[in-house]
Amino acid sequence: MSDEGYELEYIKEAFYTNWVAPLGPNVDGFERELASWIGAKHAVALVSGTAAIHMALKAAGIERGDIVFCQDLTFAATANPIVYQNATPVFIDSDFETWNMDPEALEAAFDKYPDVKAVIVVHLYGLSADMDPIIKLCRKHKVILIEDAAEALGTTYKGKFAGTIGDYGIFSFNGNKIITSSGGGMLVSDYEDKIAKVRFWSTQAREKARHYQHCEVGYNYRMSNIAAGIGRGQLKVLDRRIAKKRYIFEFYKRQLNGLDGIRFMPINDWNEPNCWLSCITLTGQVRPADIMEALDNENIESRPIWKPMHMQPVFEKCDFIGDGISEKLFENGVCLPSDTKMTDDDLLRVCNVIKGLWTYS
Image (cartoon, rainbow, N blue to C red; front, side, top):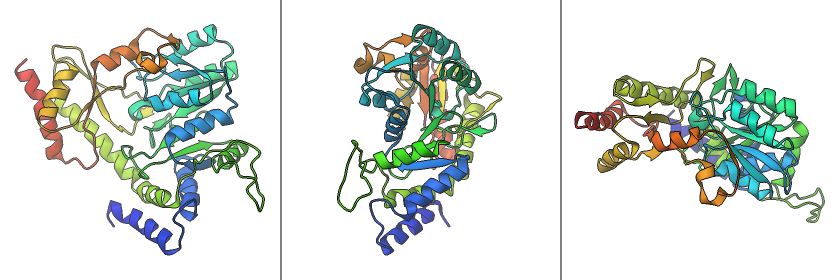
């Protein structure tokens, strides 16, 4: 059966049984199967990874005026839910060794803000953060640790799956992720009561009554049965997707590693990344804009590394703790085409365009 066939079977079943939306057997199955795949005890399927972060913060008791430490080098969806809760983000720098939250910067942030309530660490581009020192600091200061593993489904840190190491883990199934439900997310945790509460909040906080009874503000955040069917089908090929993403990364390394000034995103001994995107940094004469423009001229899409949150106008008044490593990664980084449907010919075409810049530089 092709990769697409699995999704169609689940979708057909949903239509035949009239479980189109909302909720249904595919939602229950997707939660159960994803939790089993990564070794989480409990999971709740939501409309997006952003919703999952929002619900994790609410479950953690984050309220107006609370401070939340958030990784600086990430997509805005990591930080926006902090504001949804009327809390204040403080952005924490990355290090070159992981591209993720720098434990030393985190420690400095704890010294400056001892009343912080939660930390959101990101596993950027499928690279695991160095979790042991981060967990140690969070436990020392008795704060909740939320893992944004939106880009890191299948990534492991010292043998444990990203998203299952902190108090809460979130995943995204947006169309650009390693598997997709067309749109959707998942919140996982070992806290059964918290996941049950999120399930309640995300279904408009409707009380168990014959009439519509609401004692709390709720959210329309639950995943549909159709979307969950797509997710269940995609989950069956996750191993293959991870293998292909890693193949793409290694292909680029073989082809481009010898070019002066190119460095690939860091792979550490304790990290088995899913290589969601293959990313490089440049320190020589050829700059990121040169590569992106050359690829664009061949109708090949590439992108910069995420622009850090402390550089975003919407967060310009928020504090930033660190030495500006995230800014350097943004200024010098490029995300190369990494779609699992790419053939060797496609990958070689990308590499040849890039190599051409060194020929003429």
